[in-house]
Amino acid sequence: MQNFEFHNPVKVVFGKGSIAELAELVPRGVPVLMTYGGGSIKRNGVYDEVKAALRGRAPREFGGIEPNPRYETLMRAVALARKERVKFLLAVGGGSVLDGTKFIAAAVPFKGRDPWDILAADAAVAAAVPLGCVLTLPATGSEMNGGAVISRESSREKLAFTSPLVYPRFSILDPATTFSLPKRQVTNGIVDAFVHVMEQYATYDVDAPLQDRQAEALLVTLMEEGPRTLKHPRDYEARANLVWCATQALNDLIGCGVPQDWATHLIGHELTALYGIDHAQSLAVVLPALLRHQRRRKRTKLLRYARRVMRLTGPAGDALILKAIAGTERFFRAVGMRTRLSEYGIPAEAAEVVAARLDRRGVKLGEHEDLGPKEVAEILRMCV
Ligand code: NZQ
Ligand code: ZN
Image (cartoon, rainbow, N blue to C red):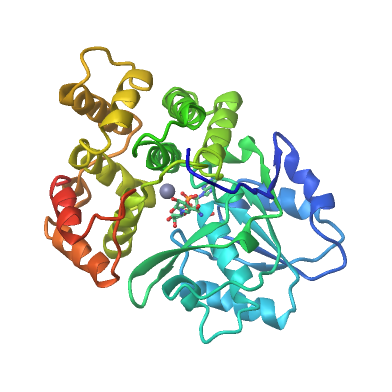
């Protein structure tokens, strides 16, 4: 196993009715800014529940954070938070609202030239406004990690940052808030969580059987609870299991002491930035091709995946691995996800465009940090 440090400070408050806990969790006597997205929380009652929990206090509000949250929008929230001397941020919504709020948290006290440098130039996050969240969409794991992904409309970039200072102080996960999700977002969540696990699992073996089995448990549970949720959308237990899977899929735990890949995500972010497809859609397109392309170097782990997750039998070899990857793509399709660029109307030239963009940024991808433009283009050509 590789060396690691593990420190996850997020208090998770899970279950029906847990939004009422905000009364105790949100600090009193300081200006609070509540952030949200395009209005789903007003339609499904979550906004009212939050306001009821905070009755007697008057949090400022900033709505309109869009999916793939934009720097341009978030900077307006930064200006508001500075003006109102906000001391606590409460994000209410999906991963985009939460990621956007993490950026606001880091940008408000930022002393450098432009907070965009936190994303584009690795500028240090020296301080951040504390934040908490009510999560309404199981997918990103943002509720229990220190990462955020922000898009910039003017340059069509989509970049990530991480900082120990932007972990939420608390995350309220009430699975009942997810009943109102459209099917597309449930599908997105299943696939995003699945790919988070794969990016921390399907690398090379470092003799870490516990992390392997934790990852496999998540994958198998997602393959069971995802379809169950889609078939029985009013099943609270299925929702609860899905929420907890998504949180565990990217909360630092299964990634401890093991190599991580993230090539699928980084290629996917370019597809979203350029062609506007949903985050999880981009992953469903890239992952199967990436695994096929890299299958010799990932052989040991993919054979383990074939046997323990896809439950395949037969001699250890390329055929078994290819069958497991085909099974993965079939699973994505079975939960309602398209898995090919052409199905999203993305032209074949995307392969070269994305490869050149990543190359310009000097990015080398994968667990060996050696996938360059040639490999990225090859992988994307396998996605058409
Ligand atoms: O904006 P509103 O009106 O709230 O509607 C949202 C949005 O349109 C809607 N929604 C959310 N909860 C709902 C709901 N609709 C009905 N009922 C509810 N309970 O769903 C739509 C999508 O929301 P969004 O927050 O964009 O989805 P998701 O949670 O999948 O977040 C995606 C973003 O997270 C980033 C992605 O890149 C993307 O920008 N990621 C963040 C990560 C992290 N911080 O660790 C890791 C991930 O890999 C990912 O990159
Ligand atoms: Zn993701």
